Amino acid sequence: MPKEQAEFEAGMQAHVERGEKGVKTSWDEVNLPMVRHWVQAMDDNNPVYTDAEFAAGTRHGGLVAPPTMLQAWTMKGVKDQAPGSSTTDPMADVFDALTEAGYPAVVATNCEQTYLRYVKPGEKLHHTYRLESISGEKKTGLGIGYFITQLMEYFTEDEEKVAEMRFTILRYKPAQREPKRPPRARPGMTRDTEFFWQGLHEDNKLLIQRCLSCGQLRHPPAPMCPHCQSLQHDTVEASGKATLYSHVTMHHPPLPAFEYPNTIALVELEEGTRLLAGLIDIDRDELEIGMPLQLEIVRCDDELSVPMFRRAS
Ligand code: ZN
Image (cartoon, rainbow, N blue to C red; front, side):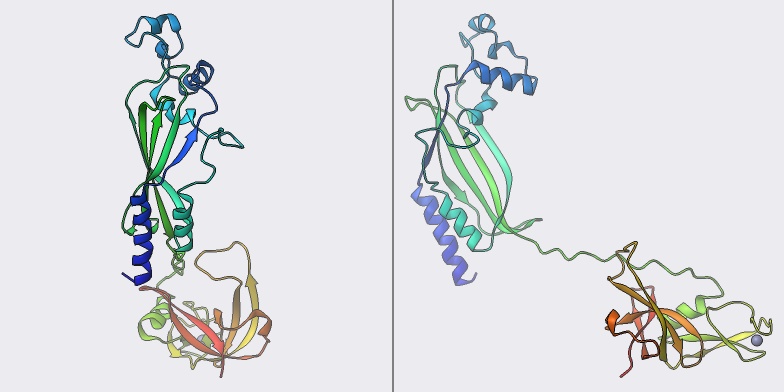
């Protein structure tokens, strides 16, 4: 572990050991109107929370508040903490240190509440909070970080403890996720065109179809010569020298397999046939019709290689 990180962790452990506490008080006593709103929102129909006559006949001897309402009693208002709450947060320097050390992101990971007894309307609660523990540096799916557990202890006005809560968060460095580019769509491959794709991928050659009867070259591949209608053909390998015949820049729809702006060139090979191909390292505004280009066969993945062109040196 780097010295700096060891010091940082020691600083946080010292904070745990100091056990510095903050206090949060409540605006109101435990009260029936808030309970009524809560049980209706939660659809909890236990009459011990709202029916005084029923509650009087239970072991509680009167109304009690739902235990899981615990956090509601000392929750800060929309604007302010209740009077008597700590004005400075003893946890703030820990959180600031984590941000400074490069762990700015936060996610709550666990909340565990323990109820020691029911609280009743009329009781006024406050809770203390402190840093209880901090983990070593952990690797998580979200990123590398520290699990930090705060302990909140809830008391009545005469300091009887009624509940506690452990709240754990992860402070982490968001993992840098490289967006994974999906593979290019496969070209339509038939028995007439497979020589072209195989030549690129397996032999690193750009092949041009040639009529065996009249010698004309043709692209795209086709079974019959458009000049003499012969069905006999073989191939010749292109030299790779070419010029830019025309170009177009694709904007929509954006396909995730390609980088944008996606300029597609119509390239005229030295041998005279033309083909569509992508360009490498040429900005759109540098393109000039007739500019000399050089073939580069680019391996896209384990199955596919495509012809591309860069500026001829
Ligand atoms: Zn022919």
